[in-house]
Structures are given as C-alpha cells and as structure tokens.
Length: 494
Image (cartoon, rainbow, N blue to C red; front, side):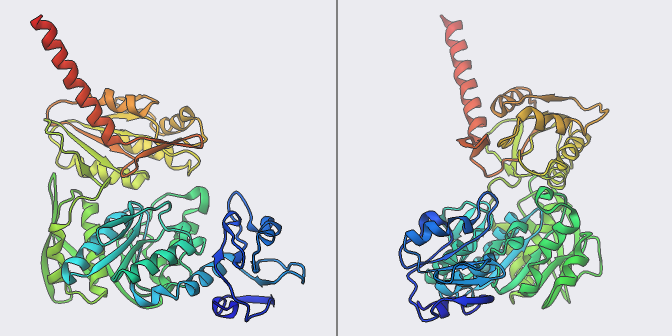
C-alpha cells in the first residue's frame, strides 16, 4: 500500500517522505518491526517509541511517524498525536472495517460486560446473524472465542479484529469501550452506530485524577456516535448528553421523563422482572440475573437495540433466554444448602450493587470476601471496606491482584475505612486460604459472595501472573472435604 493511502486521515504537521513509497506493513512495537514497514512511534506508560527509532531503522523500517522532527535523511512524517495517527493508519491498512459493520460501543464504570453480552444476544436472537463482541471476558465471533489482553485492544489490534469479524460475516460488533481506550485514542476514527452509557462511580482515578476528568474521558465516546443511549438516572448523565452529537435516547427507572422507562420492578433471588415502556409500547421483561443493577443493564440493551431499529416487543422477550455471564452474579452449581456467588465487583458501587442484590432475597447470613487490586486507584479501598461491613453479615478481607504492592498494605487501607462496626470481619491475606476457611463457616441458606476476580483465572503477584480461579478453589476444597470425610468413615469402620 502506498504511504499516501495509509496516511490519508493522519493529521500531518510536516512530511519528509515520498508519498508514493510502498509500505509492507504497520508496526508500533519496535521489537516487531520488519523491513519495509511503517513504524509509528507511540509514547507509552513505561517506554517511548521515539527512543527506539534508531533500532527500527536498522531493521529496515521504510518510514517513521513521529511527534517530533527527525533528521531530514530519515523518511518520516511529523504528527500532533502518534496515537491518533496509529489508529488512522491501522484503519486504512485493514481497509476501514468499521465502515462495513454496525459498531455498538458501551462505556461506563459498571455493567459494560453484561450489557455487551445482552446486546449481542438480542441481535443474534432477532436476526439469526453472527455478531462480534470485544470485551473483558474475551473477544468473540459468534460463539467462537479469540484471545484478549485488554478491555479495549490497542488501535492496531482493534482494526485487525474488526477486519476478521467483517470477513467472517458478522453484521454487528458490540464492544466495551474503557475510559483508557478513549483517553488513549484506541477507538479514534471509528464511527459508532450506537453508543451506550451505563453509569459512573469512582474507578481508575489513579489514571484520570478526578471524577470530572473520568467523566470527560467517558464522554469522548459520544461525539463518535450516530445514536446514543444514556442512563438518565446517573448523576453524570448531563455530561454524556452534552457530548452527544447524534440522536439520543434516555433510559431509567427513577426518572419518569426518560424515553425508555423500567416500571413495576420485581426482584427475586435468581432473576429480575420489570415492564419496559417506550413511546406507546409496553412489554414485560425478565432477566435471569438478580438485582436492580441487572434491570438497568437490561434497559441499556433494550435501548441500544431500539436505536439499531429493533422493536422492544421483539427484543425484551429475548432477555430471558440469555445465559449466565461468567463472573457477573454467577451462581456456582454446587448442590449445597448454601450459595456461592462469583462477581467481578471491584469498585465501591459494584460491590454495593451485588451485596444489596443478595441481601434482598437471602434467607441466611451474607458473607462477602474481597480484596483490592494493587497499583490501581487507592481511594476506593477504604470505601469498599466501609460498604462491605455496612451491608454484609460477615466480611473477609483478602488479596485480589496485589501486583507490585505489599498485600498487607492494600488490606490495611481497606480496613482503614471500616471504622466502628458490629459486623465481624477478618483478614486472611492468602486468597485461597480465605475462601476455604469461609466455606467451612457457611450454614444452611447462607450466601458467600466472592468479589473482585469474576471471570479472571489468574492472580498477579509482583510482576508474575499465576493460575488462580475462585471456582477451582471452591470445587477443590469441597472435593478435599468429601475425601477427608470418606477417610474418617473408613477409619471408624476399621
């Protein structure tokens, strides 16, 4: 492909390269550059691509896109933003796949994974078409999973995935759009058919600094959308609405002025029911996930589908057939007199949501086991400690992904927010031990919430990722208890 075709949408400050030169590929990681490729020098968190320009030239890079002028002997283009340039170049390299498929983007603090899965299910159920999904739980083409590293991949990988979805016949792609992805231009240049805002609560403040800046980052999605669905009950809805460039639809439960309203909400231990009202149409809906938050997620999906042109009388009934979403209010099928629920809750609001949902129907005690991630927003740690002890009957504080922080230091910050409380709480640093000891405490009708890890099957300790799955720990412990019980019976017989 010619350089001029690749850079047609790049903001070029100055060019010092032959526009007709042939480019054999695109790279932004200096370790992966091949001869004849265009290298985009991107400033990262731990390294700067500009520092490796000599290296990529030695490897035979044909041209450089840089945010600073280079020697005139080096074929290069100067741009104001390498990240935006990378997104534009990647889209051109893969022949603008987002223009050939309907793209739905979902942003917000909580609910993105659930909402994207619900939207995907609705479209597939109503059309029979194959739908792509890009998100925290994985990237999917129909029912086939692709590997993933980030909630929203880097722009080059994003465009590559979109191209694959187009080639495999997907009519739509639904993606989680994180605040990092928006702030770092990973989705720059994509025109979204629909954008969805779920809610905003404290998270990622280590990156954004303040809630207002966090909100501004989320709002970056909506000027890129033809249609937008906004949760009007959220306190930051005005920020999102003011950013919308296209058609908007509001949804909510508390605000009767919403375009799509959820009424007659009924919450059960294993499901939620409500009535959806849009214009003159009324439809009963049911979702197999407990809690008020699940009703909001369902309304998000119904609103997005409506903006895509689907009738709510067709979409709302499909919610009932949507299967469980891994790590989102996931009830483990243990066949015990108690219940174990795994949930990804790792923010104060999400933790409050899942505990509240369980409390509304639990007949026994509610145990909450959680930790907080290291090298991430510290401000939420004491808030989560306070919420857990206010809403639970008993709390166990343990590790999540401590990363390079000392686990005990993270736990101390969680405990600092508890203050005076009548709720028993304990600290067990080792997460496996914490889960096993808490399981042994459970009685009839008790509920144990294992929060924070959700779908994850690993822990990050230091800089090492180790295999760790809450599900496997639970199953392994119960299996060992059965074996132990059998040994005791045999010994008694002897």
